[in-house]
Image (tube, rainbow, N blue to C red; front, side, top):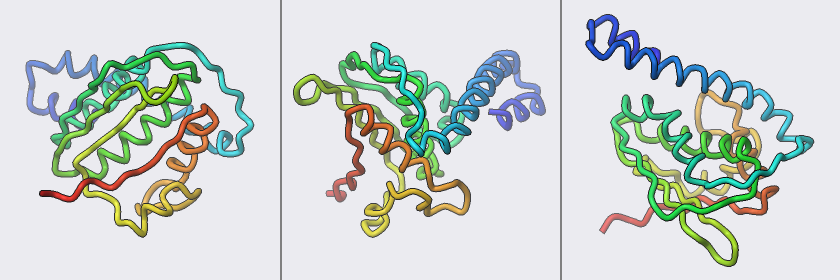
Length: 186
């Protein structure tokens, strides 16, 4: 976001004020998100108490997509949120962190553009399926088996805790999280 703002200023863009407002909002939300990430190390121990609320899952998904809109735009990634959505009773902050982590991983896997889509639909019983699909580079099968292990990462940066924490948080909320391979091209 800051790089886009700098470029808009340097190029004398007529949209500079709009971009500035959007960047300030994004940076403010990211700073708040970074505070939450700092607590992830604490969360890994499982000692944080969840604060469940009832809310529409679409609200959090759309917030996460907006939070990453500038990055997605810069990478040429089209985003969408589809499906009927539904109510959840979980900690919205914890769910937001899980989704931010998943979207970040997806965007990093699409440096040359692509599509990222959330599908929100009723599952079995009183569950809600939040499915994220992307057209990223994919994950080799031997890596997939280890992705949710603490400190495992395929990148040169990062702690390798994101997906391990995501799994633990989702399971504590009564859900499941899986990574499925893409269908092979026809």
